[in-house]
Image 1 (cartoon, one colour):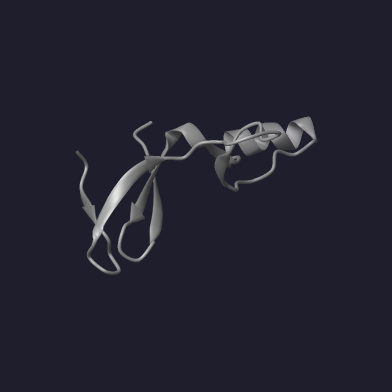
Image 2: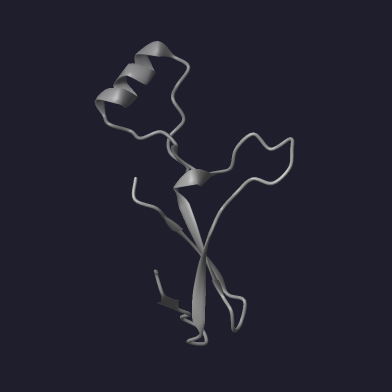
Length: 81
């Protein structure tokens, strides 16, 4: 069992999952914004050559949640990809 102590109060934290409940949610994701790809094909090609990153999207299924039983502190971590 993965035991983790709360960084705020030191109580035990319980591990849970991040799930979508109900509709019309299609999916949940965590997004790190990047550079928007240019609509101009030449500029877009140059962006690719310069390794300008686009948005990095992590789907919700890659996340784990931890909830503190003592103070209610909640944290999310990225599961191994």
